[in-house]
Image 1 (tube, one colour):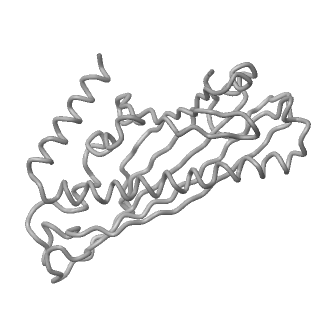
Image 2 (spheres, helix red, strand yellow):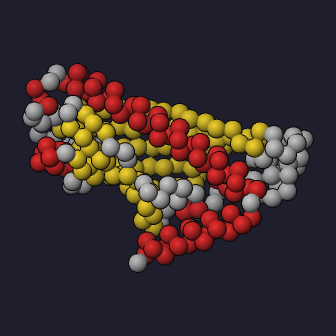
Image 3 (cartoon, rainbow, N blue to C red):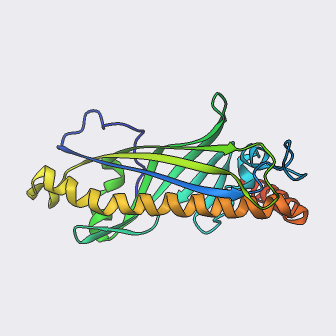
Length: 231
């Protein structure tokens, strides 16, 4: 497939455009989030984990995520079928840690689409624009909770928008029906991806916080990924 343009509607598009939109929220509770704070167990806590260099926790899924360097990653989305064709999107994501409030923000505005013969022949990648923003915030409840109690959590929200030229044979369908059919496929995928990612993140934090050897291994894994991205 080719390379999609930056986010937003495609300026100068000659064909009518479909607009797809998917939103999702996901959350998980974690034990030991208050480590290192008053009333918490000793050791690094959730705030420390979420402020790690992003390479240390965005290597959770090496089959689908590749580090590009400078806080950017390539994410390969799962195969999706729309109206008798299938697509395999690949998205470039930039990750930033922001303050006030503290949060991790993932933004993407570049997408490449491979797929079935019709998708390749139509050059769909060159006919779409994409915007994705995912924010992750975390809360830590200070207090006298016993070690192992739920002391905080991670909350994530995402919004994805896609603008695509409507080309034959899809132009034979009413625009609203076409958008409805595609959104019906896209929205459950986005919800599942976010829910799975947040659940994995929570599980990874609990292991990271309680296991010094695992923390060291994650640092080495991130360093190895960084070396590989430069090669």
